[in-house]
Image 1 (cartoon, rainbow, N blue to C red):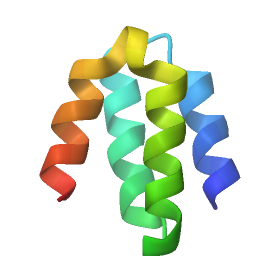
Image 2 (cartoon, rainbow, N blue to C red; image 1 turned 120 degrees about the horizontal axis):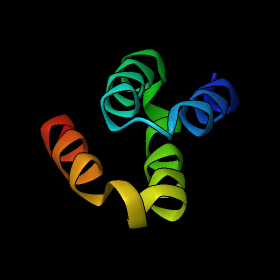
Image 3 (cartoon, helix red, strand yellow; image 1 turned 180 degrees about the vertical axis):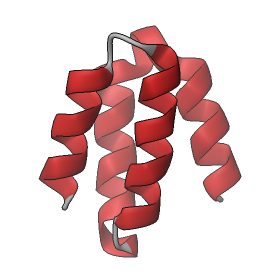
Image 4 (cartoon, rainbow, N blue to C red; image 1 turned 45 degrees about the vertical axis):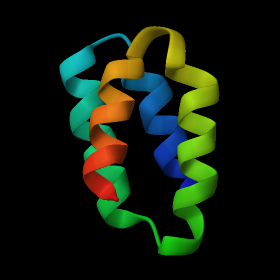
Amino acid sequence: MLEYAKTILVKVSFDKILFEKELRKALRQLVPDELFQFKAWCYEQFAKSYRRILNRVFTQLA
């Protein structure tokens, strides 16, 4: 499921609203063991463009 979530985020990264929606959906579907790895990957890939969204979504997760 982790690789699927990554693929979807890459494909929707052109639109910030869609990106946030899919990010939230991915977080609901991933198992706890995958969340740390997924969070690190998200910041590595999208911090330049979507740091605010990432911070907001991952802060709410905690």
